[in-house]
Image: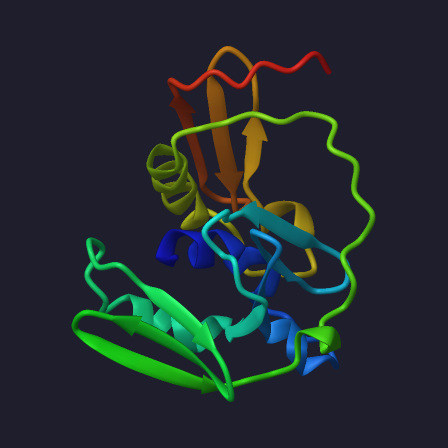
Length: 172
């Protein structure tokens, strides 16, 4: 769950929306969803067989202290609980129907990559992104799919570029 929450961070970070519900991650129908009304990120998470909202910032901070080899169980009754062998944390439950509906998306290209390799590359490149929202092209990471997957980011002064030896070929 830690890697998924980190992957969703760009869709939530700096979120100045008047909808406080968008500071949460939606778990529903085997997916983790985060967005800010302009950009949404969907991550397949088949083991997420629960409908609930998890507060992104609080959960991400908590997950720093949960060992990576622990099994995390999520329960949603009157509150949302994250349980593992060494502890438990609970958050107030927010109704999932308050979250904006999923935009109607059609998949153009689908593929599979090693998540650990991808997250390592994205984390390395993220340090080179600008926090200047007036220059949005410099706040993101670019992925160049092909025979190898290239990852690039720059803040206007520095640039990161990395090639991942994972194939993600697409036609266009």
